[in-house]
Length: 91
Image (tube, rainbow, N blue to C red):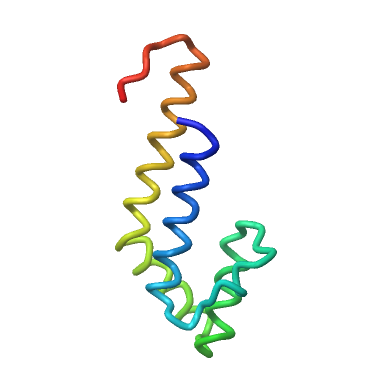
């Protein structure tokens, strides 16, 4: 697992976010630094949500498809840790 895998997971997560919050566009991710707070601000502005509504929306998002992407990120990190420690890769 490498940078390409991490980039793929990031792209997948972005796609899931754009599907979940359909008002998000590619332009909303231009210059995006990966800050969850920045993304929450974009969602809040686009949908007119209160802070509590944004938090609820993100909890729902994390409970849905984002968990799959997080699992992939975790596997990438585990693979890197094994390579650093000299353990064989299980994948």
